[in-house]
Length: 197
Image (cartoon, rainbow, N blue to C red; front, side, top):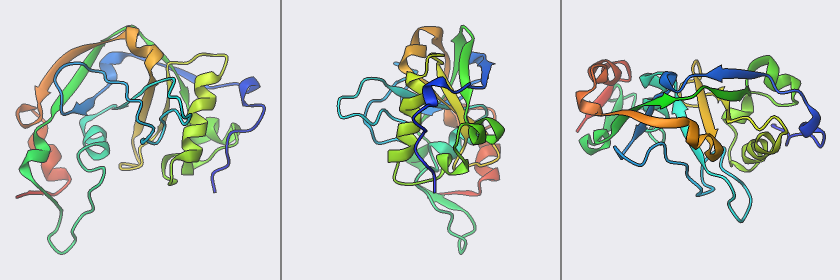
């Protein structure tokens, strides 16, 4: 069971990495206003406080991860049918790429996460109350990182990234390509055995 971050988290050493915005991939229903920093409190690493003080935005480093974390987030493969039955309108989304200044992010997986007192459940445990407390602890850390890396729950061989809204000025939307027109769309649908209906 994942424990909440320890009382001395603020004095812990965060392992950090620099990430170029050009490495990021996001899938959205919108071609403008991105990256969007949500404040709903309903996602894994959202601000847990009643008065939402910071927003979060979620990214992958490749289209497979972004697709699994968004389009397939609430889907379960139907083994009798041999894949993921999806209504075609679920593909009415955009693949977003970004430009901007380098981002400094904490690493919250592997050895760095273990050394902070956490474990892999950070990416999988539900409900989200404890992961949200981890997010808040990282947000408040004196290093003032732009966000943190974690292992994708829906594609657990891939890193994913959550950014805090303070990273917003470092990012600008590069391209917004309709998913169906993206050069890798057919490969993604094939790799995930998506069955359009």
